[in-house]
Image (cartoon, rainbow, N blue to C red; front, side, top):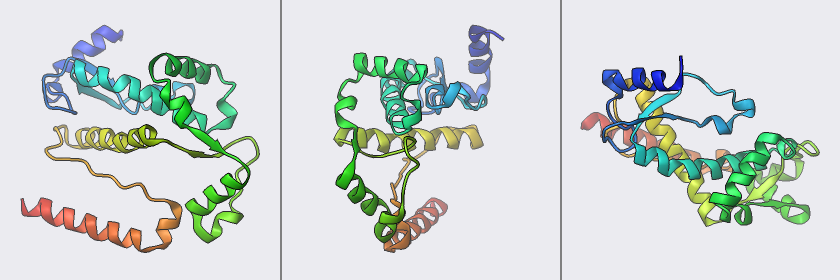
Length: 200
């Protein structure tokens, strides 16, 4: 089926009449997570969502910057043709992300592993030439925070065929946090959220 026919058929379904991000009339099909995130664009074909033109367009450059972040950390992909295409797009549309994403080396990398993994950090060694430790600037961190927001709305729609009625909250946990009270606080917070939703 061609893209145009698929779009018409998809948006004609009753549950696909509204944008999953803002609730306005849907006009486009959003592929999320975007194909650009996956090696060889081997993307789960069922992850199509109704979106308005404004939301879909607004997300496109952010998704490109996020794809750069994802693929920049996989050092084996940096000579890949798809990576070079993303890099070219980012230089044109979101050049700030290139300056913000910094691979840590030497003592900085050791400290980064300690920050992530705590006392186990010195024992964590990434395979040579495959993955590295990176630091992100303020804008990059913002992108990493809005990604779960989009994903939460998409998954809610995927399972309910309805627009998420509230906000989506996320928390980024470092591996070291799993050994500390942060996980307990998160568990209590999630329990409170479930009780709050049930009460409504």
